[in-house]
Picture (tube, rainbow, N blue to C red):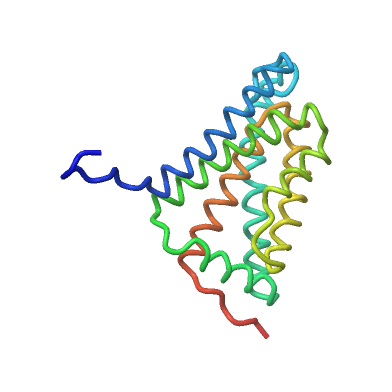
Length: 194
């Protein structure tokens, strides 16, 4: 290091997120190539045209339903409001750009790894358990998040298997993360509805 030069600026949160999920995607590609099937998007064989077209629409509908359930839960249950507040505190302020990057990178990276690479090897239940293990938060208050990650891992696995591709799980994952992150950073948890 020479005198007068300043150290490089720290990586932005968006750069770190992209790096993390790109790493997941690379691991997924290596795993799939290792088993002789590097096409992570299509699961075993050739999905029919209707499956490729319908999967993202089904995923978006599923994502919307999950988001609606989270809104109902935060309105009626203290544990959901506590989780909302914990995520708000943990995430801090996020710009719309950061929310889009986080939702897009996580939906693609995680779906490539869990449904694209691990599902064909381990099946629906084990890949969902590994997915849930990645979603263990700091403290017991995050247990509902972990349990919901397991349930969504199972549903995303079934959707990927039924449609033969990752379009549905990626669309659902993106919708859930994007809409919930926007809500968490924009809206403080409200008191219970009587």
